[in-house]
Image (cartoon, rainbow, N blue to C red; front, top):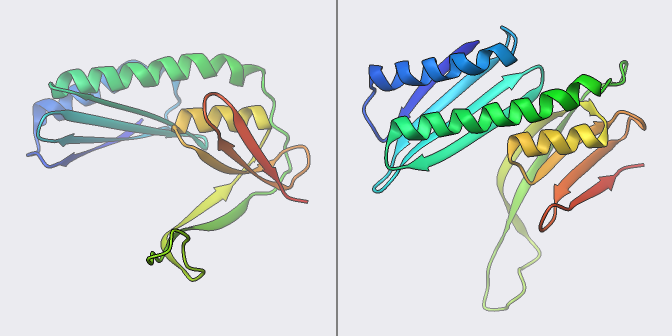
Length: 182
């Protein structure tokens, strides 16, 4: 597994880096050699955060943890990732993705409104953020799993059955919404 460690708002520390790499070795048995991990260790006033993101064959797995001790944050973030991998590994064994479906690159923008004295936003909106994602073919249940693994509230993907672009979004609770294009 190719691993990179980034320090934010704290000095680079070899013992912390070594600890993170040792903990990631424990979950390497669930992943193949092409997996890539990115560890971001950051310190705040009252907490230390470990944010670990692993990418393997198009699947993204993320674990975040805050605590008073950085070593504890790393261990708990890795534990979260290990639980996710174990939980979804069994589901992925039984899932057979449809081959031959194309991939699309999709660009979407987050819009911010220009506020005025009115309670309603003005029509002209400013683009605040632009993202480009690759919409890969997936079944709807696989898209739900991917969204859970990422901890995201929105996922753009190609429906493997219809080969149309779909948007899956999280509603309140454990409910999902699906937007299908025709």
